[in-house]
Image 1 (cartoon, rainbow, N blue to C red):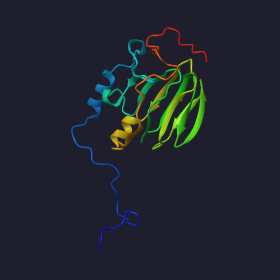
Image 2 (tube, one colour):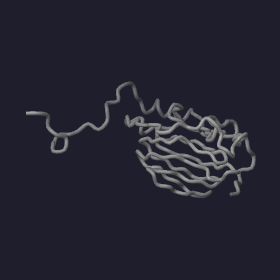
Image 3 (cartoon, one colour):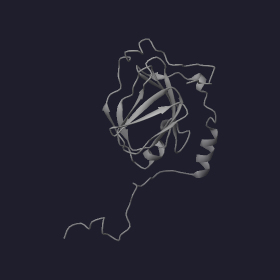
Image 4 (tube, rainbow, N blue to C red):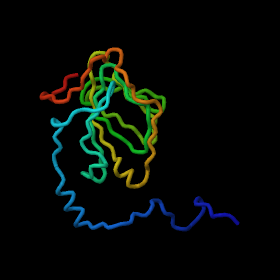
Length: 184
C-alpha cells in the first residue's frame, strides 16, 4: 500500500518547516528597539533604472521589521518595469502620475491617489503612461513574513529594460526633492 494522501488523511500536517536555533523574545525586543524608528528618505538615492527606479526604506535583510518590506518606486516618462511574479501580495499607493498595471493579461489603469493591489502569484508589470512626466508609488508588502514561511517563489518573465524609454532619455529620478506636494 502507498503513502496516505494528504487530501484524505486525518493526521496532523506540517505546513512550515521547523525553525531551530537560539531565540529569546527579550533579546529580540532589545534588538528591535535598538533599530532606527525613522528612515530618512531624503538621505537615500534611487537605484536601478533606466525606466524604473527604487528606493528601499525597509527590506527583509535589514531586520528592521518582522513582516514588512517598504520601498518607493519612480517610473520614468513612458517607463515600465520588468514583467514578474512573486508569492507576496503588494499594495502600491500612487503618489503622483498616471499609469497602468497588467496583471495576468488584464489591464488596470491608475492615477495619483489610487491604490493598486498585486495578488499572490500574479504575473504583473507596471507602466507609466505619461510620455513626459514621471510617476511614483509607495509599495508595501509582507515579503519578510513570506520568506519566514519559506514561500520564496519569485520569477522574472521579461527583464527590466536597460535602455530609457523613447521619451525618457536623460531622465533622472527625483532623489532629493523638498516639495512633497505632488500635483498630477
